[in-house]
Image (cartoon, rainbow, N blue to C red; front, side, top):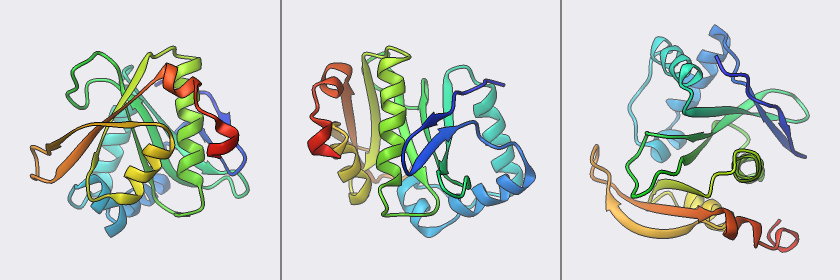
Length: 183
C-alpha cells in the first residue's frame, strides 16, 4: 500500500483513501448515484466490487488515487487520481480523473484538481497530463477547461459508444496560467 501525502487547500484537502467497510459503502453510494453514473458511464457496483477496486488502486504503483476531504468536516466527498495504463493515449504520460460524490457545485472539484495537478507537475515532474471526458458531461468539460486542459480530439467510448473528448494539459501550460484571474 502506498503512503500518499496529505495536500491541503482551503475548502478541501486530498490524502489517503480510507480502508474501512463504512467508506466502501459511502463510495458505493457515490458510484451508484445517477449524477456520478452519468459522468463515468458504469453500471451498479456492489460493496465487494468497490472494496476490490479500491484495494487494486492502493496496490498499483502506477495509480495515485487520493480521497478528497472537506476541510471543515474532514469527511470524504470524492476522489482525484493520476494514473498510468488506464486509457490509451498517443504518449507515455499519465491521465487524471475526478469523481465528486457529494458537496457538488461548491468549487470543491476545482480546488481538488488544482491540488492534484500542482503535485503532478511540481513534485512528480510529469510533462503532460491526459484525460478523457464524455462530451455531454458539460460540468466536467467546463472544469477541465477552467484548469487549462485543451480538447485534442473527439472519439467514441468503445464500451458504450458515447462521444468523449481527449484533453491534455502540459506542465508549461499549467505554469503559465494566471491563477489570480482563474481562481
